[in-house]
Image 1: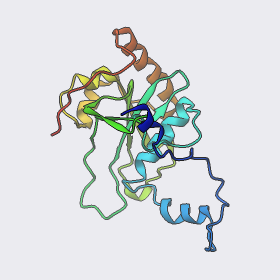
Image 2: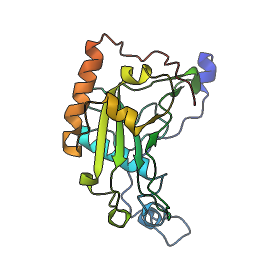
Image 3: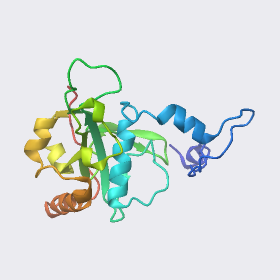
Image 4: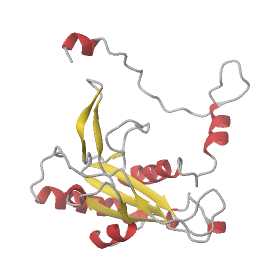
Length: 215
């Protein structure tokens, strides 16, 4: 893409944190009314990943005020650690015959260049550290997405993911390769340890193509 073409790209204004009291134009409803309507069921598969990302962001002190839905990674620690968060849970928001099987997908994806508006030609592992988050409650009547004690986290360095040749993993694989699960309160230290192990291995700061295959 030429410099002139890049300069002509339509660029959105930066997202700003909402307070909740902002009103819709032409409608007697506020942003908090929308949040209550759309986001109250934190068990939903579309919402659980955002809850998990929020927990990780708070654990490491991500200073960005708004979630970047189109970013190449989910959470950015103040130390510059790029973190990808994968989440799952045993209980869902619909009636179940049995508890859900824990799986994590899309370990690699094509990277997005915000300046050029283009995607990389091949899928890449785009983070330095992966956090696998599981809402671990198995008594669905007691499920509480806001209780950090019901969450378990496993942390792996990026190279551990590149060494696996498929684009999805199950919980057993994660448990086998991580150093054990950690609670929310221990998550930041586990992420720093994984980052240090990744750097010590001689990894470059820019992840290379991962060549992960889709199942």
